[in-house]
Length: 223
Image 1 (cartoon, rainbow, N blue to C red):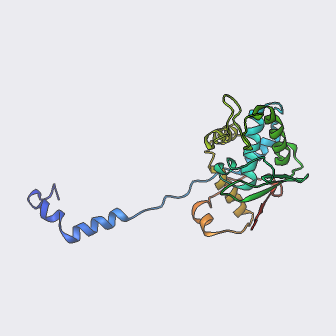
Image 2: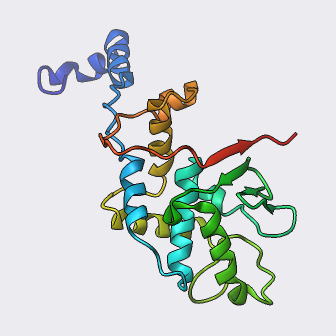
Image 3: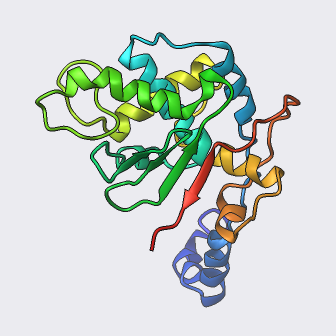
């Protein structure tokens, strides 16, 4: 309008047909193709090959956090809701039941034959290592800070642990991508699929041929 007929610019710009045509163009949304998501098995293989220092709270916390996310497909924020007080964690020998104190579902973690990816062992180890640090602090979150002031580990802190672990395993991705990676692999393995997953999480999976262990995670519904 401006370049073709400057004298008619005002009239043409306010024309009903022109306005609605431009509005329709502006509303057209082309969804870009979904980018592939990293394969959970690649990270698991790295975890199996690399053993964290059993006397390092930081390394054990990193290992525990990534195992919980890979096993359950939960959000990083869900890990901040886990608590070690009586009634919030039940150690049943070959499994551990985690009951968040607010706003999330109850999960059961099962033992794995592979020591380095056994969530039951690493949860116990982290509680053992953090006992002295949290002593007298009245902090009962499962995850606490590993350096500096003793406090409950925030989503940002735990996310940093997860991101560093993924990077060490050769995966450049955000902590939140673990949810998509787990959901996409579950779909490939014929887990039940829901509309929310289909819309937001189902992605092409980068190929990896190594066998996957049976699921170490069981959701528990408490009414």
